[in-house]
Length: 75
Image (cartoon, rainbow, N blue to C red; front, side):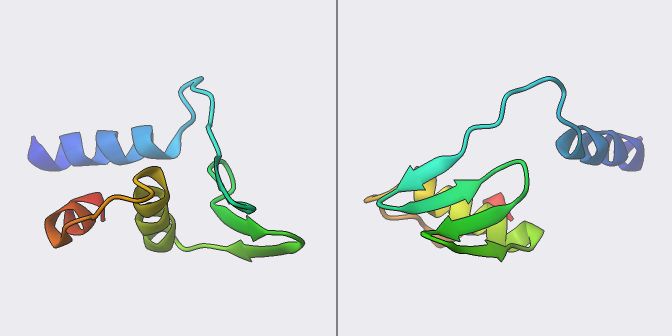
């Protein structure tokens, strides 16, 4: 049952579910949610899933200290 629920959660994470994506912008740096890209001025970098998760956590909590446990939980 646990494996089944994990697979369902994985599918739900990968689908849009009709939700709108919100990009995060900080001083010219943009994290684009629907394409998992980081953009600064004219430069665009494709991110891995884990890179995206870490950057989203850090940019969403700009100016705050993030603990190791919070980083591990986000991954």
